[in-house]
Image (cartoon, rainbow, N blue to C red; front, side, top):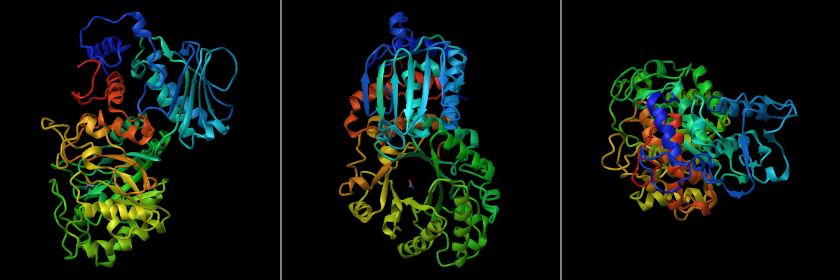
Amino acid sequence: MRQHHGTACVLGSLLLIAAAGTSSSATTAGSAPASAAARTAPVPLGRVVPAPLAVEPGGPGFEITAKTRIRVGSGNADERRVGEYLAGILRPSTGYRLPVTDRDGGDGIIRLRISAEPANKALGDEGYRVISTRGSLTITSWTSTGLFHGVQTVRQQLPAAVERRTPQRGPWRIAGGTIRDMPRYAYRGSMLDVSRHFFPVDHVKRYIDQLALYKMNKLHLHLSDDQGWRIAIDSWPRLATYGGSTQVGGGPGGYYTKDQYKDIVAYAASRGLQVIPEIDTPGHTNAALASYAELNCDGVAPPLYTGTEVGFSSLCVNKDITYDFVDDVVRELAALTPGGTVHIGGDEAHSTSHEDFVTFMGKVQPLVTKYGKSVMGWHQLAGAHPVPGAVAQYWGYDRTGQAERDQVVNAARNGTKLVLSPADRSYLDHKYDKDTKLGLSWAGYVEVQRSYDWDPGTYLKGAPADAVLGVEAPLWTETLSTPAQLDYMAFPRLPGIAELGWSPAAAHDWGKYRTRLAEQAPRWDALGIGYYKSPQVPWPYR
Ligand code: ACM
């Protein structure tokens, strides 16, 4: 999956050579190889995505050689785990042994250190420092998550060829100096819709790796919708076995067994991400209604649905069994969720009256908190008395009416936290322009600049800045069914949303960002990630 073979690989390397050392100018394919000096120039310190908080370049910097060792503390399992992860990235492309060791001796070490020294604690739960000198490269943090984020920065400071899975030519130099970094927001996520089209575990892991590369820390999984129920629930087994048996356009669909789901959650955790499961209610529930007739007000199960309409289904708000059902589902889901949040949907409940919607949310939110989880919902929750601690996910767009915005702003003033997913900015399923073959466009076209060029801190006028927990980029899959299609829609927009969530507001600058973004392209090639070659970005080649 991550590998590129044959001519594409060779071409990619040549182009990478041509690209090294040029910052903003476009270099066309087939141009003469650049000088050796240009080829070996390290990535300038801090020229990564997302932009770091503080960068102090200086000194000769570190070089990874055949003698380099990855030094971790004796008995420190977290340092060792991150060390093995780093070695796993570096070994195939460098061809070096890179032992992970707790022994002193030799020169040239990459030191991974988790420590509670004040300089680390000042950078919070996810911050880190990278210190690159001639003799050593140190990544240090208060937490293993911060250490992991530091590793992502080091990856991007190395030549893009480091991401290939076969031996490449060095040298493997990292510019000298110090990076101090921490995120602007605690919530930096993406949603993957595994309901409209089902994506097996390996595809989800691939997406997790892409999110981790850009220091995102939440994977919101949209596990149920009209077209499919994707998680095994022991007390209601037909949800998965029948409700999960198809998808948009027909076909077999699928679902995660509990063991598979736990595997996703563990894999995400190993990469610094928390999984937020969503069971969309009371609308977007045809797959559940088709699986159990008793959930329907008229007691008749509708057929499975493979189209792409929205707003036609609703759980039966006035039946007790509805709440037994939600209680069972939330209980089983909560047991699979080490993170603190369960998402209950709430969008596009067009077949539920407002009164019923408020009644429903009034009964369902306590079922989430009862199992020790906090409630997250789409922003319609703001109009249905969100419980204390609830998070509303804003998915409006420029044409969203003032009354709807006011409702969200008022909830925020009353303590509801917000995650911002403006559809005409952050929706990764939206077409880039009129010629994009994949995707939807109900909120307009979302080119790369539009996706990046907004400020989460001031986006919802009147909402207190500290109500904003962060940003999330949803990837809906009505039109997407393969990893290549996910890549094409996520890249290059996903790194921009990641930067909005991570980098300080003062770093926001489209003109500079587009150049840093362009420099990511050889990395995507090396990783086998396809992307949209937006004309707004000065790619090193076209
Ligand atoms: C949504 O796009 N229906 C949240």
